[in-house]
Image (cartoon, rainbow, N blue to C red):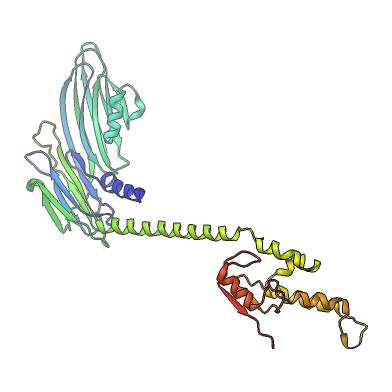
Length: 384
């Protein structure tokens, strides 16, 4: 039960937990969570910008067929061991081109990178001189151009770092082609100037949400929009899932307990004290435990014994007198030796006593004297 609750909380707080998004210009982010676990989303702007992002709702995924261009120019002065970065959200099929011009009297070089996501940027910040942590890593000096094709829709950081001991100035012209989702045909539109936009997802539907940003950066200190995205869980799914898994676990434990009980009953010692007390009273033939079998085994053994005891040379198949005594002893009750064996025990099927003695055993001990299994009933055998 604890593990099931842990999985549910991981989905609610981990996979579909709240997240803070940083948006650059011309962002076009498709939001399509699993409607089985998410009932709605809430989008809220965290700062006051002069222009606000938009939230759109569609019954199906919008087409990624709007091509636009963007161009930004930056001139910055980097002190020693510092960096500067700019964020863009680019969809698959976009392209970014960066032209640079490094001004340094001592011909110092800089590091220019394109990193995918905040994790890629964090890895580069840990070791700026290591080239294999980013999508594109370049040592720049003088003038030049860098181009990068985008193969996956994600946020990308353009960053420049100064690993030198002095101040270095650089000019960057960032241009590119961006593929955006088509917003025509949206059934829901919401501007974040309301501070919060909310949209529901249909359980059996294919609707999707789209978060977009204006083409120009906001007039904020960071030059980007900060947006909080929250997911509303579909509680009925989690409740049914936890309840169903709890029932399955209970069913497994119930089955294992029944199997264990059956195994313990089957491994009990079939030789009991009553048998050891009665065995010396029987003839040598009856000392064999196989003669104390079930009612079906006993009947078949009696038939074999009668056939063996017949004198084939005597007229009309009369039995020899030597076997007559053993045959009579075999049919007597093993408890009282007075009445014939005329009953058998359920469910084991053993027969070794008369109906009167068998009834007393069932009422007193309640176990078969042969196999020691619990007795449920004593059935009388009627001879026709």
